[in-house]
Each structure stands twice: as structure tokens, then as C-alpha cells.
Amino acid sequence: MRRAFTLIEVLIVLSIIGILAAIIIPEFQDHAQKARETTAKDNLRILRAAIERYAAEHNGVPPGYTNNDPIQGLADYPTFRAQLLGPTGYLSEFPENPFNGNNYISLVADGAAIPEGLGAGGYYYKPQTREVVIDHLGTDSEGVPYREY
Image 1 (cartoon, rainbow, N blue to C red):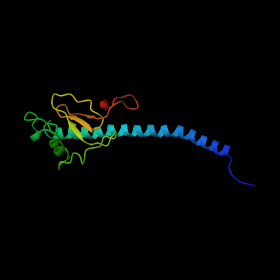
Image 2 (tube, one colour):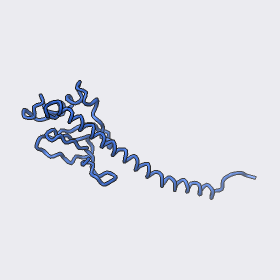
Image 3 (cartoon, rainbow, N blue to C red):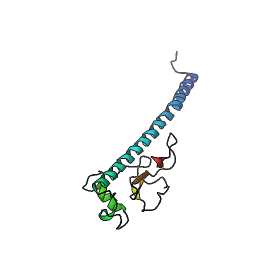
Image 4 (cartoon, rainbow, N blue to C red):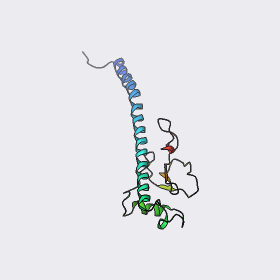
């Protein structure tokens, strides 16, 4: 007597596995998306806290302005980077955008609007208003635009 599975038995097992996979895989994808959204909110909180701390310690002047003088000139990225990542220790590194892995922060000129972006950068920072937004298009799993985090 041969002991083996029949074709019908194998097909039944494969169909059950397929049904279970169809139920479980979307659940994992949803959790991964929510984890990225939570990370984005936390990274923005970290950036905003560092900017506010810097401003509090420099007479209300946010990071990015040369010689901490917003009247003298425009804010620039090298100055912003040196002020937050330098020996002052506000941040050890800029956090990554969890949606694309980019940690570059684009500075927005005084008086200009924060651009919509392409979704390929890290963050936008407007020193004049101390606004920081993530460069990611669309809405999260609850319908909130990422730009409103």
C-alpha cells in the first residue's frame, strides 16, 4: 500500500494556505504603514524640540541664521546643520524620513510658502516661523495629510 497525498488533498491544503495568507498579509502591511506614520510623527517632534530648544537658548532666534542674526541675512543649510549638529549637541544626527529614508532638511526662505514637495526629500524647515513638515505626499491611514503632522 502506497502512503502519499492525493492531488485533491494537496490542492485543499494549498487553497487553505492561500486563504490564510490573503487574510494575514494585509494586516502586516497595515501595521508597517502605521509604524512609519508613528515614526514620522516622532521624528518631527524630535526636530521641533531641538529647534525650539536652540531658539530658547539663543534669545528666540531659530537655527539657520548666520551669527544668529535673522535681520542680517537669509538662513542657510550649512549654518542650520552646524548649529544643530555641532558640538552643541541638540541632535546627534537628523532623523530620517521613514517613508523614503532621506534625512536632508530643505530650508524655506523667509516670506516664501513651504512647497508641496515631491515626496522624495526629508523635511522642509522654515526658520522664520519655525515650521517643520515632512516631505511626503498623500494622507495617512486615518485620512490626515502627512503635511499636517
